[in-house]
View 1 (tube, rainbow, N blue to C red):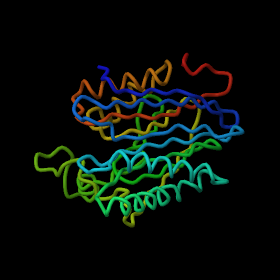
View 2 (tube, rainbow, N blue to C red):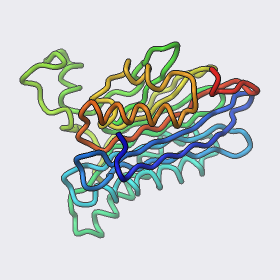
View 3 (cartoon, rainbow, N blue to C red):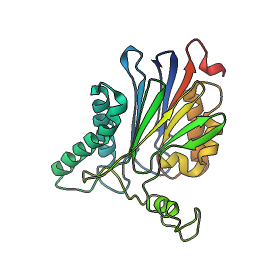
Amino acid sequence: MVTEARDVQATRASDGGLLLELAAVSDRGTVRAENQDAWSLVPLEAGRGCLLLLADGMGGHAGGREAAVLAVRHAADRLRESADPHEGVGEAGASANAAIAELRRDHGGAVMGTTLVVAAVSAGRATIGNVGDSRAYLLRDGSASQVTEDHSVLAEAIRAGHLESGGAGDPPRNLLTRALTGDPVDADRFSVELRAGDVLLLCCDGAWDPLGGEALADLVGGAGPLDGLLTRACDAALEAGSRDNVTLVACRVTETGVDPEAR
C-alpha cells in the first residue's frame, strides 16, 4: 500500500572499518491529512559514523508538524557541533526543547509538542536518547530488542506492575507522560555495542504499534536494500491498520568490503 505522500531516502556512511547503510521511509498514511513526523539521516565526516533522528509531532495540536521539524533540526545541529557525538546525545533533547519553548512563545503560548528519538552511531556503538514513545530497536540475528522505554501512561503502568499489556481497561497507548513541549523534561539515554549485521531501527508508534518488534525484525532484518526493507515494513504497518503517520529510520552495520544487499 503506497499513499500519495511518501518519502524515501537512502545513503551510506562509514565508522572506522564498518560500512553503515542508512535509510528512511515516511508515509502520511491513510487517515491523517498531514504527516507530522520529521526525520534526518546525517553521515558524519571523516568516517566518524552517523546520526539518526526521528520526531513524531503531537497530533491534535496546532504546530505538531512544526515542533517535530524544529526538534530534528536543532537536535541534529547540536549533535554535529559536538566533538563527541555520543556526549552530544545528552544535550540534543535540551536544545530541541529550548527551540520549542521559543516557538510556543512566538505562537502566544499555544500547546504544541513532539516526541524525539536520536542515535549517534560512532566507534562501534550507538548512544540513543529519547523523550516520548518513538522507539529504538536493535535487530540482531532475527530478533528485536527494544532499546528505549516508552514515556506513556500505559507503558509506565505496565512497568510498575499495575497493568498487564493488552487489557480491555488499559489507558490509550498514545497518552504520553513525557514529550518535548518547551516545559522542563528529562530525556532517557541508552548505549548499545554494535557489530556487523546489526540494524538499529528508529520508528514512530504508527509503525511499531500495529506490527510489534518481532514483525519488524522479520521485515527489516533480512537481506536486500535497506530502503526496500523499510518500505516493506511501512506497507505492512498500513495494511495492518495503522491510523497514524508511519516513519522508520535505520542504520545497518556491515564490514567494509561486504555487500550489505547480499547478506
